[in-house]
Image (cartoon, rainbow, N blue to C red; front, side):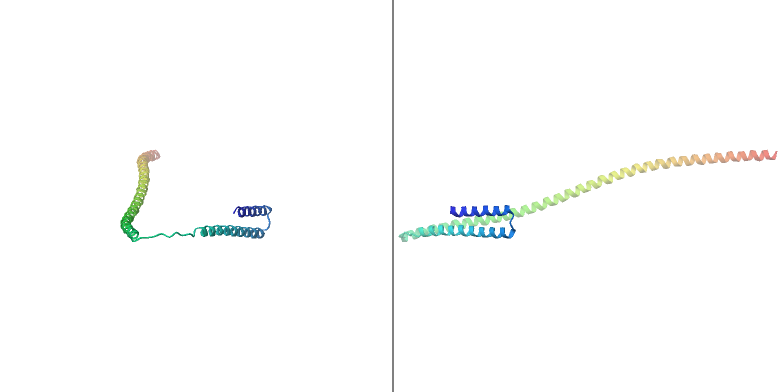
Length: 185
């Protein structure tokens, strides 16, 4: 067997040498495949030879006398074993049922976990929306207050402008009256 291993090692070294020398791929491929097939065939034939030796050496038989009592004992053992097998099969059936029930519970629990995770994501999304809307409302309230303040200032400025316009009109009318009076004189 060691001869074949040495032969295989020699072939592998040759393959590596050819690979290093960068010969054409077809040559390398054909040498590699040939060496692998030769190596496999030699190892395979060696194994079959050892297997044939082992089979030929174990073909001896001894005769044994069997009595009716031995047969009866064996039948009793078989019957007892059948009972044990029946009990074991019942245990296996129960275990299979328990396993199926456990798998169903696991599937339902995984589904519940997925539902809970989805609900948690929805709640998180709603919290984000509520926070954004609250911030937008606060900004709008601030802008509204500022607009009301500007409106009140504008109203005050308008009232002041009207008053100033009326005073200017009165002053103009008074000047006009003075001018008309001076023009009459």
